[in-house]
Length: 112
Length: 111
Image 1 (spheres, each protein chain N blue to C red):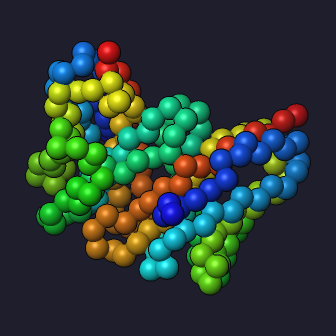
Image 2: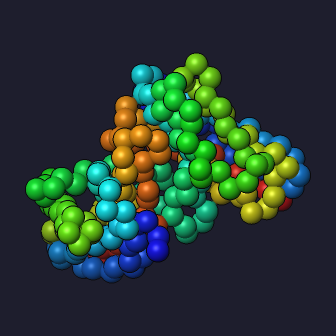
């Protein structure tokens, strides 16, 4: 597709389970970002990939969160041992650099 | 102090009104500035970049004041469809993570 694709669009899980969220960026975009947004809140930066450089993980809230980007394209955000406070919309964005970000429609994560 | 601060609003204005939002940023090394728009339960989308000389796109005008470290967005002749949350975005250097999002200013344009 032409845009950023995220899957699943909705994920309901039980506290303590692991979840994987997937992001397919726009082809050719070298930068990929993960953000999360809680209801009524702003975007919280999680992690940033730029080409082959080491990712900027400074926004990951705990060691339960990790992300990887394989082959400079698809990215997976993994949350281990989910907690209720992890419930949020997880947004992925890609860009060609420090300019216009194209966001996916997000994954709504609900931890029961 | 938060890196990017905005008045959350809401700003309630009648159709046809002019409304302005400000945003302040704390990092004087910031190099790039943007306004994004986010509709309810939707992803953010770029509205416009903000250049040092100021720039205009139709009814929207963005300005940057580096000395005071704030950017502004002016919307003239407000339309009902302008109702949304406007996110101020500030970028640091080109190395590493660069974009900080404000929490947004909510605008409601009423008939």
